Length: 267
Length: 201
Image (cartoon, rainbow over all chains, first blue to last red; front, top):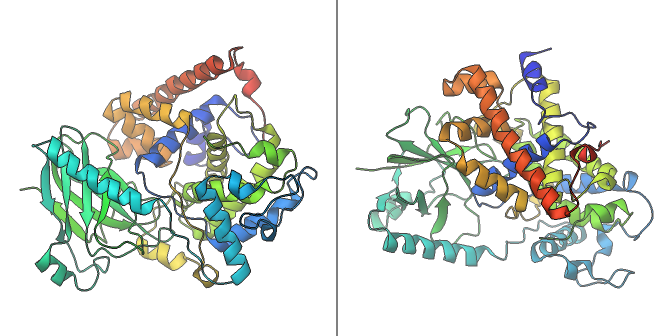
């Protein structure tokens, strides 16, 4: 038995598939969900090919009976099931968009990426919250992003962006432990391949272990400034710098900092 | 809070299957992908998790856990099982490795991602975490969220191994008692925890 396995045997919150469900596991899952939700970023979508495979597996394991029609093709937008209920009407807006996306993809064979309907409103709201934070906390600092390397995450033409309006900035309120990042010219990422991750350097912590500020995405359809809320995992006593790295989906515990496109250092 | 889907699946309502994939696919994919360096492993795990969900849908009990927590728990099991079978701590692939491992989707198609809408249990967990000392929060995060082994956490934080173990156990123990108490309050009749111990296939 490996050391890893031995240690896991001491952890009742990590049971093997098929074990009895314990409240330790429920607590651990709730903790993981809480931490995942702290970033406030959209979850990466399940790749369409994988959706197909998961859907194909289902009939063999879902008990027979009840409502028929398991085929995606039958879930027509606005259509009604034999029971008289429109599933798309009954589902939330996002589920409806997802199911519609599945249908379009299946029917046309063409790539379909439905933009999240709430995104424009959410972006506007974050920009407003940023302004609000600046207005309400006079001690909040604003520091401009600087290019830290020739990383392609900062799009071509960034020199021009820097000259005219900069790459964006960071607003940070130490008192509120809140902040916002604004980006211009940061390349869109595919969250199934890579995500941006924020790191906050704290004068009272070892520089080798900056505070993880969470992962975020720059959507391809973003137009103009992209505003992202800062939600540090740990309290930041005295921020000295903010850095953006490019990491695997979900981020990493310790970054190698091999790809570090942007840095904002406080004077 | 959205309606539960697993009871519908348990009753044989196959039309709930695509809804379930849409609702939880991104979550399960995130939980798998953020720990498993290999994209192929992550895809296999996602398939296994959904098979587990279809098979154990009738064992979902909303008095024991919310549906999203139940799904996250099943996903955690499969991911941890995959890590154990690899007999190695989770890897952190470089961005180039992750990119090289990426398998293009058919015609680049993707289903749109969604924001995580957590339930009351995760909100209670968040409150609970915020009341812990920074050191305790960090240890719990490294263990539960990052799946680091106790010894790796001790190495990373510089804390003694015993302290790491006690931080994790104490932090989770108080949360689980809080969640169990909430279940009792909600049910009015009291939830027997042994009753909550139901096996999943």
